[in-house]
Length: 159
Ligand SMILES: [Zn+2]
Ligand SMILES: [Zn+2]
Image (tube, rainbow, N blue to C red; front, side):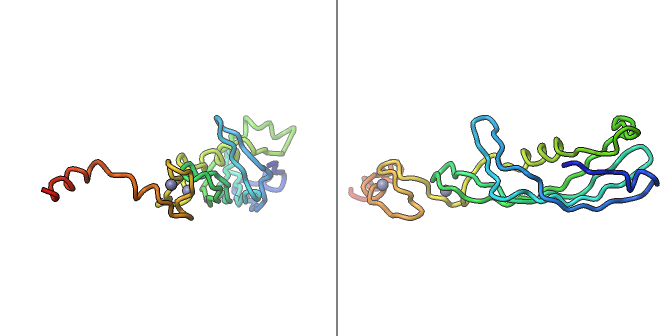
């Protein structure tokens, strides 16, 4: 995401507001493939301070993930605040007034990915017996299994 700073470079305190889609379809990290069903939205304000270009704002969007319990895909919405500072002396502004904030946006997107991907807190997952998705189907496996924690109580009650 490249931003031309020429309008704010002339005066200290000048600001520039921007709202743009960040073009990305997927990120692969470790063995996970993270999909973006639509481009994340970047909303920022750039300020020309004495020594730096200050970028403040947010990035929001949706990530498509597979639930680790039931394997169904679901969408995770995120909003992330961002503040980045770019030192003017490192930007070489005399030659080029364009600032590329893509690497930082990319980092923020990676940090938006939840560690655990579970479609809902009470997702029932797949039945270990028959493989059915227990959020949708109630199978008979569970009723046949005996929970060992209750077995002692049952023996006691039968005495
Ligand atoms: Zn699930
Ligand atoms: Zn089952």
